[in-house]
Amino acid sequence: MKVYYHDESSEHPTATHDSTGEYLSLDDLAHIGVLGFTGQDLSQVDAIAEQRGYVARDEINVTKEGLGDAYEDKIKMFYQEHLHEDEEIRYIRSGSGYFDVRSKDDSRWIRIKVEPDDLIIVPAGIYHRFTLDSHNAVRAMRLFKQQPKWTPLTRQPELDSNPFRQEYVASLKT
Ligand code: KMT
Ligand code: NI
Image (cartoon, rainbow, N blue to C red; front, side, top):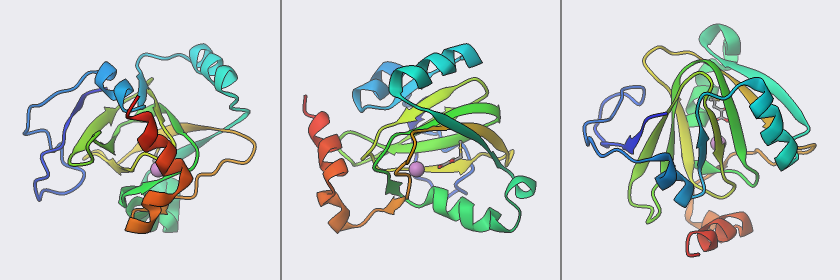
């Protein structure tokens, strides 16, 4: 799970965008509420699911074959800056990709490379996006509560007053 400031270059989203060379730690991520765990086995994932009340799970195969006709649309949706009203938890089973999350002051993108056996928890209310990398394939377990509020809410000025956004922003100040 490499973490670094995105270089904002005009290269394709799936490029590494790591020319800043400004790396961050998992601790730095935790400070903005993003939890990263590496080398997780299923029993560890079960424990986290139990602790946080995740009662269900499924698997998403983000490849052309896995998503079929929905592929292009899904890829676009994942990469559009958005937030959710619930945590987004992903346990990477194979392949790799990038979660980009907004820095604390909102001025930069932080890129998180996820790889097999990584588990990432993206908190409710943080602006983020996802892209595949140049290998174009990731398979991930999605954990969820009974009624997950996962609808991606696309970034726009009015969304800043969403209570889940406001709660997240308040959490950054403590
Ligand atoms: C999402 O909701 O952004 C995804 O499921 C992305 C693929 S899982 C690594
Ligand atoms: Ni999302």
